[in-house]
Length: 262
Image 1 (cartoon, rainbow, N blue to C red):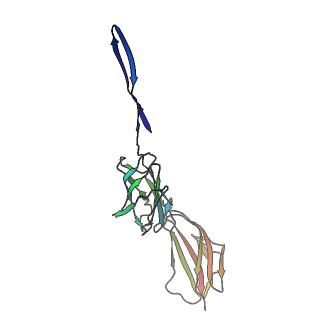
Image 2 (image 1 turned 180 degrees about the vertical axis):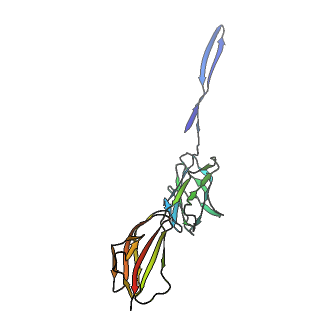
Image 3 (image 1 turned 90 degrees about the horizontal axis):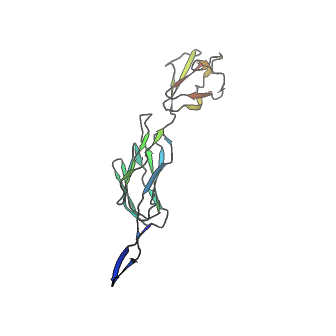
């Protein structure tokens, strides 16, 4: 943007008894107004996570002004995440040749960008691995701030990545000893320690080669309800059945009755 200015002078002079008035104008001067309007946005490759996941982050820098932005520093906090080695990349969407330096300071990533040209866009990407987190309801917090020589420091819009997953654990119990041809029951406890319901669970139970499934209707129960849809291969003694769902922080108990024969 250019701003223009011009001066005007009104003056008079006398010729005898005659007073003459006149006006003159100066040249027009033009001044370029330079602006730096640095913008930044951070995006993630996932809305939800579970411990151990790899997430890709992108930070997009834009200078819609007409003058270079220089000495740019991006401070990006890593909360319960670890940088994947050699995953940092950057790309200018014009012919810029500026260097970007990455420094790791405790749990912070510090990016130092030499300059961003007018109307240029720079994209920084990196990957992290989510730490093992015991708290099932803890989300990943993202806090990023940007500063440069020409613009006041500013913070990017904060966003959280939600911890959402199902985590199934299985425990099988039975008696320590049994006599031949006497009854035995196997108890399988399926627990969902995640915070999202698990669905379409397929239970495959390898029973002893000499196990004989009980012939009663309640030979197999799921939470004390008779299970009538299952397969039992007498050659391999593999029992298969489907459990519709296990709610978060809940358990399902499967009991299989039978006897051990010769």
